[in-house]
Image 1 (spheres, rainbow, N blue to C red):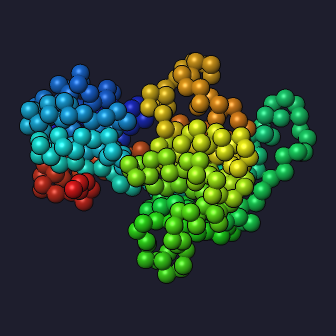
Image 2 (cartoon, rainbow, N blue to C red; image 1 turned 180 degrees about the vertical axis):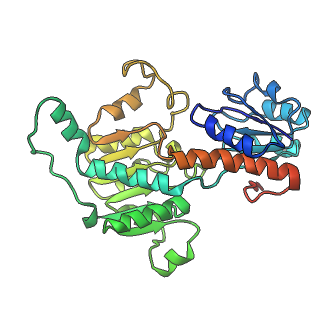
Image 3 (cartoon, rainbow, N blue to C red; image 1 turned 45 degrees about the vertical axis):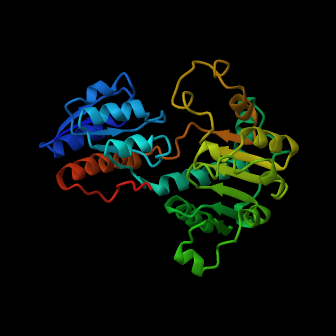
Length: 333
């Protein structure tokens, strides 16, 4: 078998090399370039490809894979919303993803961001950099006195719930699909509006879908408590950025922890050399605010998670080739 792995970063390469040594019957070609119309030709002669990117998997690229006879495409990430599924079906390509590479990593990062916000970490670090060690006026809040509303209770959401409870917070949740254990505990509310109205903190853990694009908009923010905290380690499109800026300006939102941003493609995981050179004024507006923490989609970024992303995707691709089956196969209607 031959697998071409696209978009291999420097931090992934040791794990790819390790997997290759453990699977000597597979020829592995690791490419640093992403899969697109120019690089798809590198896949000719391969049996499967492994990919990770935020760019769209377009029909032209997928059709070319079909011309090459490639039937197995394994993503090193969760999201599949950037795939042309009509082209996938037309070319009879099987697709796998990595539905959970480390839910705990993302949950830990989310709560860490919240604690930095509640304890006014940015404010104190800024004052200290100026030689100011005064306490006032930056009084902190305590998580154990708060109600946290967890939107979506998949693996990441449930991992976050465990941590929030460890701090002593009250947790409520909303999800279309109820987890039986949480259901038995009476955690769920019936509507997003109930979650918004009762929560001091909103913790988002939902996938990106057409239905929930800009779910946190002006109407949603208006229905929340005054001084609510917003956390989004999930997908940038869940939040209407302009509405969030308005809510921050009015004080409706006390602060936000954003590991994702709706226009992050081409910005996150890039180096522009200086703050002024960042090509997005709304993003810079958010970053300037002491009550907002913006990070470049790194909640997942741990040694364990990166290894799992590589290994799970490579294993799935090999499984499809050898058995035609994988427990990570993506089913699309």
